[in-house]
Image 1 (cartoon, rainbow, N blue to C red):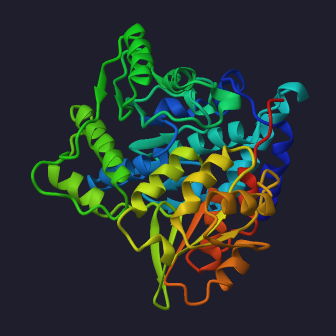
Image 2 (tube, rainbow, N blue to C red):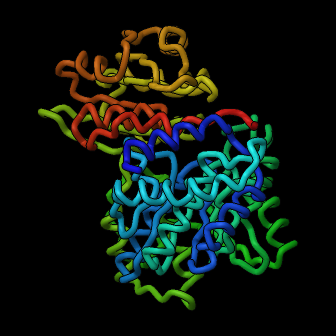
Length: 423
C-alpha cells in the first residue's frame, strides 16, 4: 500500500454513501482496539465556526505545551489536513499504513453494513492519535452530532459554536430540530460550552444538558482575556465570538488542564486557519478568500466587508454547491461587488455557473457579470482589479489556494469531500 493507492481506496468507500448512526463506527473502533479510550477529547459541533474554534483551541493547548491532535473536515486541498499533530499533517506513509491496517478489519462487515468513508477515516484518526500519544485531541464533528461517527467518544467538554440553517435535508428544517442534532454530542456530566444566542436554540441545548446532568456555560462578551486585547490573526468580528468560545472552554477545563493567561494570549495570537477571511496580496492586488458556504456564512462575509473598500471597487468570484440555499446567498453577496464572476465548483453537486450568474445579476443589476470555466480562469481575468473576493464553497477556496500557490497540490483529493445520501 502506498499513498496513491490509499487515496484511491478511500475514494472507493464513497460507494457506501453516508450513514447517520454510531453502531458501525463503534464496531470498527472495537476491532481496532478502541483507541478512543486512550485519549482525551474536546468535541466541537455547530453550523459555522467549528474549524476556527478548533484551530484556536489547538493553538492555545499546543502553546501550553501539550501534544495536540486536530481532526477536522472537509479538507481544502490535501486529505492529510484532516489529521494533524501539533499542526503537522499526517505523513503520506502513515495514511498508507493506516488504510492498510483498517482494510483488514473491513472484511468483518457484511456488504449491507459496510463502513462509510467518514466512518473509516474517523477510526483511522483515533488510531493515529493514540499511536502518537496525544495529550488532547480537538475533535470536530462531520455532520450534525447525535448520529455523527465522531460521537463515539466521551470528551472532557462538548462545545457547540452556533446553530443556523444548513444540511436541512439531514438535520431538520427548524433551528430547534438542528439544535437537537448538534446537542446530541452532550454526554452525562460533561460540561457544555456554547456561543449560540437564539432563545429557541439555547432552550434545546439547556434542556438536553439538564437531562444529562451537564453544566452549560455560555460564552458571552468579547473581553475574554482581561483588559489587554489579543491581536487575532483571523479577520472578522465573528472570530472574536469564536475566540470567546475557545477561551471559555479552556477556563471550564482549568482543573483538568491548567493554562495561563499568557498561554491563552500567545495561542490566540498565532492561530492559523486558511480559507476563512484569508487576506493575501499578489502584486499589489488584495485577494480575500472565504469559505462562505451557506447563508449564515454569506452574512458573516457581508458584515466583515462593511466599511472596507467600496463595493464598486470590488470583484467577486463565486462558486457554490447546488444543495445549499444558493439563491439566498446570491442575494446577500451580489451587492458587495461592482464586478461578479460566476464559476462552477469542482464537484458533482455544483450549482450551474450560468444560473448562478443570472441570479447574481438579478440581485445586483448594476454589476458587470461574467461566467468562467473555473476559478483559475476567473483569477486570470481579474487584471489589475485592486480588491478581489473569492467566496462560496470550501472546494472553491481550496482550488483558489492551489492556483495562487498558497498550498501544495493535493493530487485531486478534494473529491474525497464528496458525500451522498443515506445508504
